[in-house]
Image (tube, rainbow, N blue to C red; front, side, top):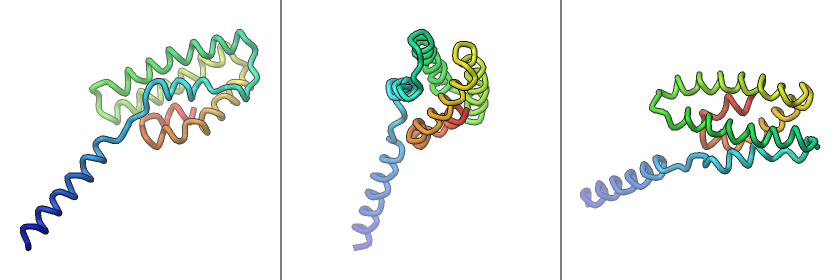
Length: 126
């Protein structure tokens, strides 16, 4: 009876540990579509096109950091620096007011993504 209990305990532990390791990270396409959900801002065509193009490049830079071999602490610092740079770059083609509205909107929109990938928090709270 003890052997069955031990085997069952090992099996249950292995199943739960496998599920925790296999948690799905945020796919690039999901992050990009979230960043591009800007219908609420009523942007004109040119700034909207610039924002959509910028977001493609931004997602690539985010995933370069996430997929790197660095430690999480270093990745978090790089993400904070990227968030700071992002805000400055957005103000280059959006007004300060529109940039602030966009960043606030993204903070709300990205909340579910930051639950899956904790390293996205610095860019969600720009």
